[in-house]
Length: 323
Ligand code: PSU
Ligand code: MN
Image (cartoon, rainbow, N blue to C red; front, side):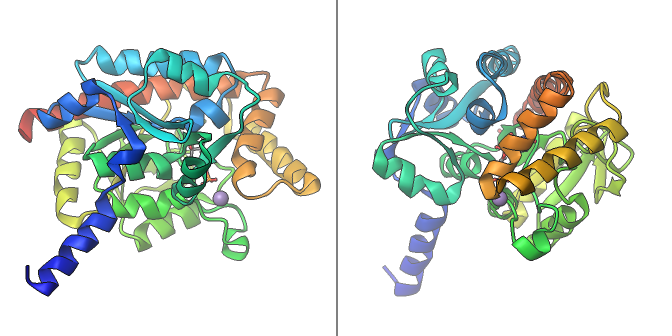
């Protein structure tokens, strides 16, 4: 082989592949991928660190059910006993969701060497899930909120690995936007810098803020149908970078003012208690849920289901064309 060509192959190898020896892909997921049938990836950090038991397990199963009802194979991705799972049975989702003595790590790209070598359990974040989905050739991923540039991130450099990973993977991530615990303006700037296509869905260009339909920021584009959204992903195969599709929550249950106060108080508590880095989001989520008496959590669950529905419709449209 020509030397340059070989280097090209090696580069490709490093970029796309995750050692098959460390990963268990279910027959259902493998079969769908081999036959170009639609698969939707789901993260597991929302199970391990996003929602409390038993709502976490119930919501994960409900998302799978919605996706399956469209004839699509869901692939919940996570780490159990040091092995990556792509596609899980309900006992495995239970194993990740149940409170246990065993250490459960929130896994972004940088954490794989640790959890795999130590045989730990892990919930994969958006970035961790993207790594695996991309290695397998999965093109759709449904979630709730993604990480971003934290408030004061320009100083702390606390910028979620989700953003850079989105720029590396030609995958559509269906989300409800970005929570205002983050600096939404700087997050959108960062996504532009690293080349991620950001689109809102049926929202007249308003970028949603998870609990609320509007963040006060605009997305670079707006699409109104599954067909238009599917076309965006098709074109992303040319750039090699991903699409962040931001779907506004169907029904606002909390006002922006209420949620902003709850978030600010939770962030102040973080500062007081020295909670930093990857522990900030899980802490703020549970604190906001406590203060809103569970309303924020119910909102979280309903948008996860809504995103599963919208993501399924887009995937069906995409695969009806790209066969
Ligand atoms: N934002 C949310 N809910 C979540 C997360 C983020 O509104 O559950 C989770 C996702 O798994 C996301 C991760 O990928 O947190 C980002 O964590 P960090 O900011 O540490 O990168
Ligand atoms: Mn972080």
